[in-house]
Length: 410
Image 1 (cartoon, one colour):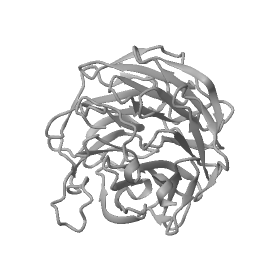
Image 2 (image 1 turned 30 degrees about the horizontal axis):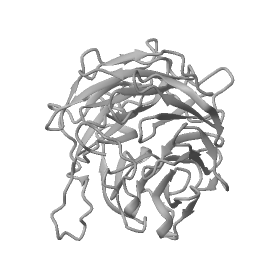
Image 3 (image 1 turned 180 degrees about the horizontal axis):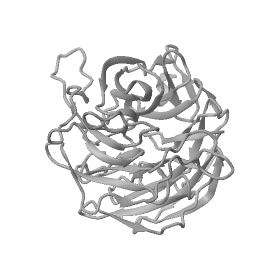
Image 4 (image 1 turned 60 degrees about the vertical axis):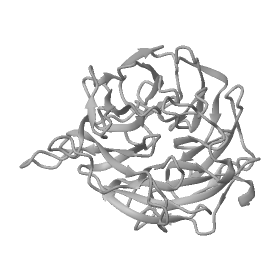
């Protein structure tokens, strides 16, 4: 029931015509069990929703609809219900990743393909071209007395300008995006190849076309006016086929999954924003890692392995950021495990979206050791082909797990 709910959980699913769907759940504080709310699921506002993020104040959900090139903004009700508010389009095509800064003033979206130069054919799989990082301003505070006082919504659908462009260039086939908690830097991975979310063949991860230079990470400084400036030496080398990315709450360490090499690439973030690789090749994963998250305490890292349907667990060395497998290094999730989430209220439960199983898995997080154990009755049914997860704390449980950033945001 509501009184025992610590979080609202949202799961996007893409195999529902004519639109994708968003399933909404209450998360039980004792068991980690999830209960789908009566009105759920909701239309995602477009086709093939692939990513989502909640605003830091927990009042707005942003959903990426890949096939419609649309970002849909939903207000989150006090009972977890969703209310569509606005739809914005990105300047490129095939958006696939999204992130928001900790202060709730800026939203970042990755387009697989940037707009092609005038007179040229649009970029696509048959006509490859660079990706794009798009930034939108959010209005942090709606004037008091407004009936739609949700805050942290699109200021407008016009992206922040980069000179005469509406985006910042990325490399080929970009993937995940992450913003440092202190709000100084944003990073996006350039996979360098098409990496599908279908079961890879026995020969390895499907790469088409393969990049001769491997993968990379594009890094940008976030200026006070919201514009971006490419970091010195960016893009940074990042293995063979990097996909997912996460940053620890202290903004000191960055982690990227390599879906071809089956490991986590680890970096320290320098004061200049540049990335320094550490512990290379030692944090091994299962097959085809495609999702990653750092827990809100900054102590543990969890990675989903799509082919194995498992979660890999690691402890973070707080001195240097290196990862070591914890006491239960691997836990069964479900076939096609993609997105992974640590619930934000108490950081006691971990959820995965299992794309091939049409279910959500729930695991209990040992807050001392970081090890995971499967919750009773897990996995739970959801709409077909779940792709990603987002959650917001509920009621007086909000932000009980505090992670301090230099700005004072938590």
